[in-house]
Every structure is written in C-alpha cells, then in structure tokens.
Image 1 (cartoon, one colour):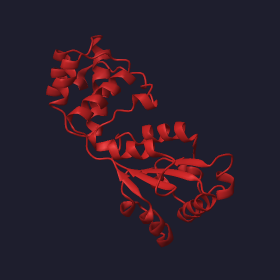
Image 2 (cartoon, helix red, strand yellow):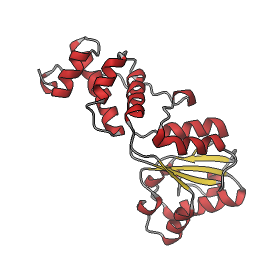
Image 3 (cartoon, rainbow, N blue to C red):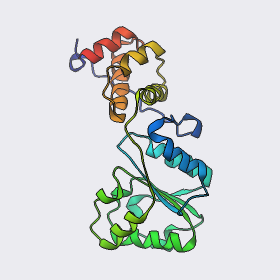
Length: 222
C-alpha cells in the first residue's frame, strides 16, 4: 500500500534539540565547528556561515548563542528599528537566514555599528556572500569582505548521525542496522535525511508500527 492511500495521520512537530552536545559533527562541518570552538579568537568580529537548507546552520547559531550569550536579531526587524535600538543589552549577535533581510541599507548600517562597537556577529545564509540576493553595492561589498565558512554535503557517517538525530527529535527508536540500510539508499543531502525521517514518522503512526527494516523497505520502494 502506498503512502498516498494511507489514512492521513498528522505527526507531532519534532522537538528539535539545539544543545551543543547534540550537534552532529562530521568532515563537512568541521571548519564551522572549529570557528565556534575558537570564539572569541576570531580573525574578524563578524563571520558568515553558509550552506544548504537542513545542514545545521540554525543549530550552530544556537550553539554560538549559548557560548557567547548572543542575542538573535530577527531578519524581519532589520529596518524597522535603528541599529542602536537593535544592538541593545549585548555585545554578541546572531542573524540567522540573513538572506531574508529586505532592508539592505539597514543591514549595512547594522554591520557598521556592530563593527564600530567591537561586537561579535554570526550571520548564517543558504548561499555564499556572492550569491546573496542583495543589490545595494555597499552591502554587497561588506558581505564579500566577511570571512566565511561553508558547510558541504554530508558523507555517509554524517548522514547517519543526522538521520539518527532526526528520528530522536521525533522520539522514534530505530535500530543501527535499519539506519545503515536507509543511509545506503538515500540521496546524499541534508534535505533527504529530514524528508525521510518525516516520511517514516507518518508511516509509523499510520500503521501503528515501529520503524523496522520491512517498513523502511516499503517506504523506499514507494
């Protein structure tokens, strides 16, 4: 029976853990991890981490926030308040999804103020600075000057760890051999791991069955 003929079951939203000890380290994110481990001894007080959706950027943002006691600045707030109003009560900041900032001049001003104050700022985006959707030359030049760390595609070991965490966030137990079977057949991408965990969550609930090898075989076949 295929997934589209199942009784519709709405799984609970996963309670994602952003604890530092739950971040899955691997070869593709070791440079980003090293950057956070080295804080506050950064080569520049403002840094950029970029990588595809689902690669762990938000998790890294929370790890940095915990270490630096950094405050999060919502991209939607940039431009609705002055830089002085946004940079209140702290000297370390995170802008997750910086590519979503609409007010480009306000972002450029915020970067200038943070730099002048000596504040630390970690920005995270889906793409490298050169591919960010900014048209303002002043902002583009500032972003291009920032030291940046890329998060690459996961290898098998990292993909297995990410998939295990995705199941754990959904409070689903899965045997190591079942994980290995799935990883060997999944696309090597962060999105594929998240999508597969969500798919198995729904199928497990619909069937009232544990995530076992036969169930995984059926899901992959469908």
